[in-house]
Image (cartoon, rainbow, N blue to C red; front, side, top):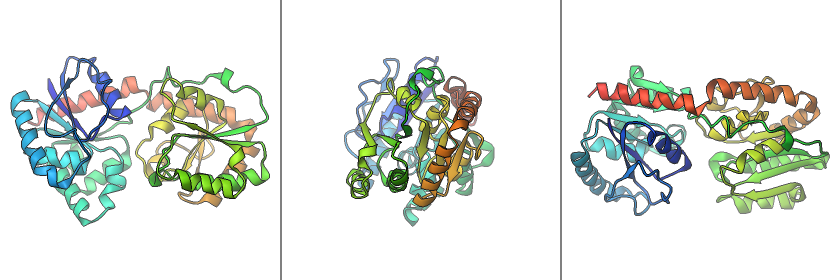
Length: 360
């Protein structure tokens, strides 16, 4: 089968999808809308040179992109075009009038971007009503797609999953120590709520000098987050780790006692699945996609989205229940083994390609 894989940039998720596709018998061509480093694109994947890929997306360039993608499609003659996110990549793909078209939600397009304004909402309707098939990583995004016009009988939901051998419990990392380590690796952007975690940790640090917060990543809210911690005297109990490689990441999960995600918007969060795969108890915001993964008190805990005071209280509660963390973490690992195995879940994408191609 010939497949055009059309994405916004070249994220770690794109790399994982394309690396797995490279191991199949399919002929896969990669089209990139925005400028991004793709130097580690698998050799088996054909990179498409077209009008896009040189700069950030601009609405004024849409007609040019549509004409260019039409030429690409005419040359490659694909069996399926796989496109997403919806309102940018998806719109360009739909405007070529190619069929069959597999639309993939990236989570934020249906949980956040659709609410930007009436223009984005109308584009969402337009694209989904003209898509042949739809895939997403969470039931909540599938339901939203149906609400915006997608045929419910032409949808597949599958969590993108993780490498369960790479992300696995490593007991040697959790040596006995006095510190109680909280861990978060969400980007410091408004949608991920790391500022909420900073406010909550300030409250925790005042009564728990043994509490430590390990923060990975960075982002546009760095000054705000550091000021919250500095102003309230908690910054000495925070370790800023920056960005780490996928190879190093399991060590940070495994040295922690609890994983925290204060995200306001998510599909099935890959970082959440990585934490669970490492047998790490998870304390996360109670947004719909998160509730598909965590059962309160069984494999983690939930707190009201955006409520720093409630998060602080939950952290203190979990610290008092430290003797139960082993059991909760083991339950988290079992959930990951059952539902978050990338080697199994990837075949759902291949199934989606087959079903989409039959609808040509």
